[in-house]
Length: 235
Image (tube, rainbow, N blue to C red; front, top):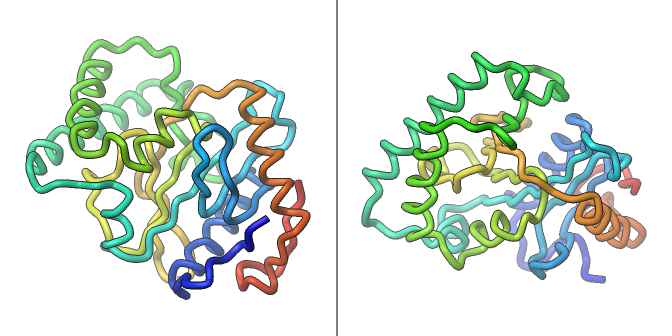
């Protein structure tokens, strides 16, 4: 099993992972570990977390990808210069519509976070013609820039119920965040959720597979040695 940190990992990247672990545990994702190889995709995620009782209907898994530098972000997003202005406009319209839907339909918010305004928006099963059209157009535009990259594949392969990008402040603009991903921005010694994630449909078997990968890392992981936390993960 590979170590929880890479030999060439920067201190800034390691700190983002530590903050992601803390944020996950504070938001009910108490089974967590760093450098976990995901089922199906083969990618090793910076942080993977899950709620207990993975077979229950309200269980969730989460993947956190940490980016401490602009170059690292661009490498996994493969963004090109063309079409950026269009993506900005489409992203703003889509996020505004989701906020409007969440305000008018509070039943779509998961109500499982410490603060309701930070809830994920559960759009599974929702039929909203305008939202569906805008989302399809935005994803098509993003796919032209992202397809074949790590971010796109993690979403397409349903790597987890929730996907989060964890970045330093000012590292990326909202329209650059892959559709459906949440954005956690480092503000001092804590993370602030600036874009809520959409929840992806996952099966109990898929959630169990993720928990098993977390457990496999947890039994060999020394977070104190790796400078990530003073608390050993449990899974």
